[in-house]
Length: 219
Image (tube, rainbow, N blue to C red; front, side, top):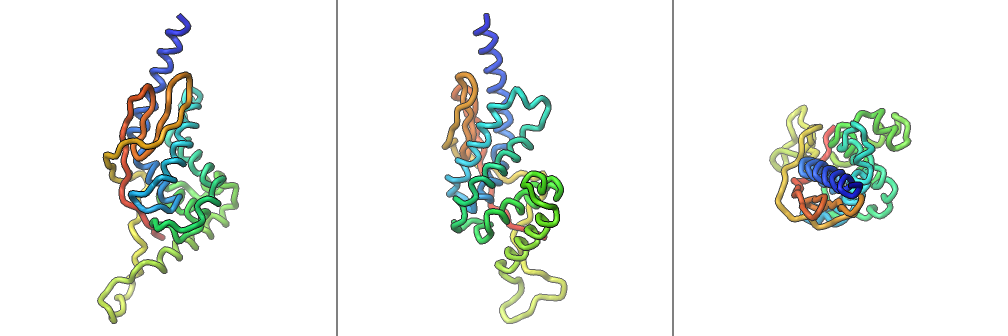
């Protein structure tokens, strides 16, 4: 009887987690790719980072008690990246590769995820003014690297600023692809939580979630 109840509970948790990953996995992977500075299509480090974050969310699934699992996973992803930031110092050719790991983290939280300055500062253990300065510096770097619009030899019209890439609106997920899951991390009693380009959870059933195009920085 106890085994049946445990099996039913594990099955329910796996199904709920699988549904969550199917809906949010693509956006989370895109955020992880921006953090690691990898180009689209070469997201091995981002997949590993997201796998670790999702495994921790899965392990705490029954204890979230109404907490948004997306917010929990995003905070975990940011914390893991902050702890492992030294691994991603070398540019890899991604959209934000020219930024430092800390600048990438602040820019992703503030502009891609739309997290408020106060929340970002609290999550990173930094003063609000420091977060604001890092974000401003990162945007300036991205602007300086963007090609100027207009015909060669012709100055841009008044009011035209250099393009800074595509500014992702908060709450708008990137496009999804159809690649199969490539990473997996086990958590829970006999069930697994996996994350890759597509992410699965549960008893071998995978839910795919792909990654969209990279996003740049906007003021």
